[in-house]
Image (cartoon, rainbow, N blue to C red; front, top):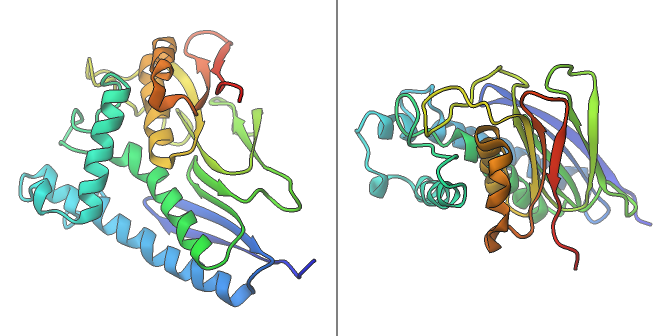
Length: 256
């Protein structure tokens, strides 16, 4: 077997740390580092366009009514449209337009960007890839030697306790809950803090949609199980910790 080049990176952006692990037997460390450099430039560009904290960002301009979506960048228009799709699939439980201050796609963008970072790295010859945007991950190629990536979901109350481990070769996994910044997700239907679930984890092929679905399940709780009867979500898996009891429920993709 060819030598395996392997490296990691931590990028301070979006008010969090984006962690990347990447390896390849096809290209060397120089090419992997070139891919990481492109990813760093990309995530910083996403921050400049999508941040709600930077007054010069396109999202901030949209929120102030200074920029119409049809005049925004191509990727801003793409995310706007994808958020509309996610809103429809979740019956409005994910709705980035019904938030304080106006349009905020943060609940979609991290997962979407994690997938885009993975594609950049693949173009540079990376085979084994993990991109972790603070709980929104995209993975490719397994870990090594045919083994899957092992991704743990920790307790919402105890960051040192892992409650469940998912093994993933390829695709996205996103977890929402009260992990980093407390009870911050609001119910778009009521405007109040969401009380549907304590934690929601979604696995599937689309990074942005996993991110949005996990957010929606915090709002909807058990009622959100009906989303996954829709054919567009037939490939998605779900694991949800209930709000007021020490129980969980899940939905697995149909067997082939």
